[in-house]
Image (tube, rainbow, N blue to C red):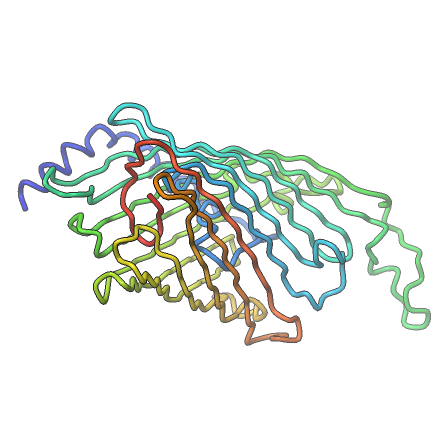
Length: 380
């Protein structure tokens, strides 16, 4: 045991200043809290959208990845008929990089579109990401490292637009005449605004005793570090700034039945000022052939619960199924397909028809794959 602590201390020491600086930044940003005005989109399939929540996942799969997710929220709500009334589309490309025996990292580019209702409020996002994967810790006698620490960052632009002509203002409403069509609001046509922003994240992965039997992931991310002003009316106040979002995640999986099964909990907590959301559930990974590093099936059951009692429509049971397969014999190309359904049980409940999400991904291998492990969360 003393040998292990000495080994960990020796390997972590070169990164101590980096970690201390990051933790200092996190504490400084956590301190000033302000009033909430808006929330980010969310996804149901955490297993296929970790990059969205935490940039430290960039390139963590050990290859070259192309992935996309489409989510339709509340299909029963009127709005755009093509993209969906409340829909989010997210796509990314990221790559695992390695140079020598010590440098491992990930780089990526991503794009997202979020569409909201009949007002045609649309947010388009494009950006880049980078993650440094380091501090792989464990005795040389282990087949695999026991700990990996990653730090990641995102930088992106948001283009926000709204079609004012599709909106109905309060002074257009009359008890006698209904919608009058006349308003004192001096807005027409399409309003538009461009903002810049940044996210940062940290991830720690533990392969218990390096034996590929028990895995733990702990992540922390901070979104909207710059808190840009999103007002489309020219107002510049504290209330018009996009509030920062804090994300804490934990996943664990343990091998059962001779590695035919991996079972474990997933916890995802999000806070964007007055908005608090807790997702808890269990993942079941099914592997018919334990000798195969690719675990094909994953079934998840989650409960999404809003800590704020005034936001009842957030609460839902989430069911998701993911299939992972491969093409080729030596350098296999791995593909993912996942589907999830949100079944709300409070507020308007199933009158909204819930939410539905489809995710697709392809990972191309690189020569000399030597990523952290072949656990259920990773590929190579």
